[in-house]
Image (cartoon, rainbow, N blue to C red; front, side, top):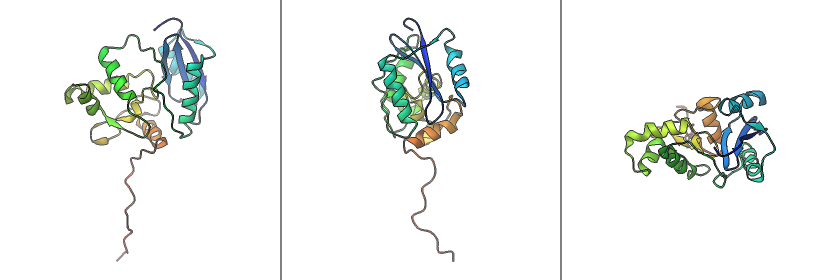
Length: 186
């Protein structure tokens, strides 16, 4: 991390979120907790020395995009500068690949592994990178699914239920489609 870490807790329609940054970029994004105190506690658990502050314009734009996101409006976080110092080269490659998965799209851990030139045995490591993603939503780990398009895990508050809700905001559904024709009942 570069320099002093600052943070902001802010409201969204999904609940209070948290964002922390340094002069280099966003270092952590906390998905909604049940209340602002919980969100702050979860955020500061990873950044105990962070100080509350008013965000610079680049972070203000990320906050506004997150607020739009939780109303179901398409939001793009690809221009948000990140400070991922201390992450392994492999995790950085995984995060870069995940950032290319856009609104309403999904991919799988195995597909990312293959796209990075690794074999299917590396899908588990891709999953580990997603589980340790410090900037969930900005790096859209919720769009990365398990094999066969199954939801898979999610380390954010609410677990996989939150993942399904976030994908639903983007129009991705895990419910089977309605049958095209109802039976006649005879």
